[in-house]
Image 1 (cartoon, rainbow, N blue to C red):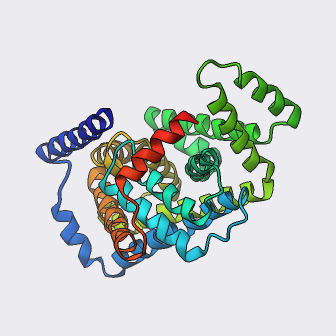
Image 2: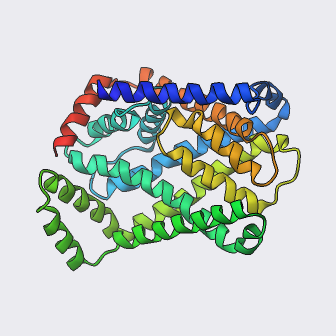
Length: 334
């Protein structure tokens, strides 16, 4: 009941924001039809998003194999990843595509612990975010003087970017904590009432991944590449409508912070929230229509994610939402 209420509230929020954007004239759906006249722009954008989704399955496969001898065939990882994207886009809520994905991975390796399964998904998301933060931090540092001098708002944005980058470095350092420190933290975690064992097991799984430094750095490097493709997809589909040339240093500052905000599950797939944020971000450099630019990207992303319905229906065994809810309930007790 509580999960359903959260989902309903998210949808209501998204619809309310979209309605406000339409009434205020900040959002123009006719731009979608105009964008189809771009020629290869749409095709390249879709190709970037498809490639990104496929390669993200490789990153998760690397994390799974840290604690498993199963093969996890690449084609299966693509299928499972796409199913998860479909459910995340069209059935937002507490039991999302992540738990659906875990059920399919459990089929491939029934011996893997539920704690490690859940941790692998969490780390996959975090490392994807690390790639975004590293890119954001690097370019914010390189172009610091020029961007800060543009306006007070841009200065605040850059400082926030650098703060997030510092947080990412601290987190990576946490993964490389010495064994003695890990043991002390693990002992202390077990003293925590109620959640002690769960925290202990989760930290064990996180440090299992952290101990495999090669895999960790491969995941971060791949995440940076995937985020770069994401930027490229956004730029390809939206840049013809900027009405002005935006310097590269602004693009690699604005778009990452927008994606950061969309990554927070406030609304379904960033609907509404992403529109408002990108509208504000592009206004910092004197460009109107940021909501429309995100809308183009949103349509392309949801279009690609919708194809996850096909492997779910025709890819063999189908796991139901009830199974995902039961899996979620079990993991909460671990």
